[in-house]
Image 1 (cartoon, rainbow, N blue to C red):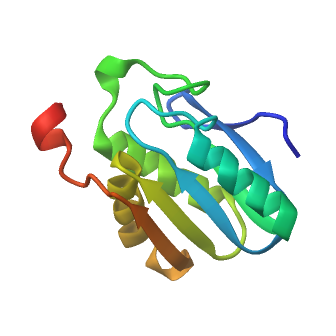
Image 2: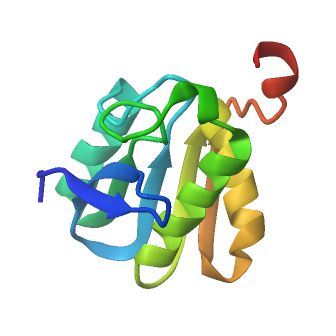
Length: 134
């Protein structure tokens, strides 16, 4: 499926996501700061998932891409809550793949839902970026 799906959050905000149906733990792409689900790494993983029959989800963080939200209200805590909500919306185990800031969010989400983790891949994680950039 390539259409954009929407995950509704309790506060009325929405997360835009795309999914590929497949087998095994669902791979979840967690992108970096000011990145969206149409970035090159997310698209390479999408193609690999389609080719290999993997379950895969990519999404836009709050205030990123096609998701709703006001940049002034964006926080690591918010992005963590949204990642956890996405995990909770899926069935079965997941493997998180986080890049840059997404690596930090992936770590926090994995700590929040350790029983759901089949794997964790971090690409140049920036778990402390808020101390320098925000």
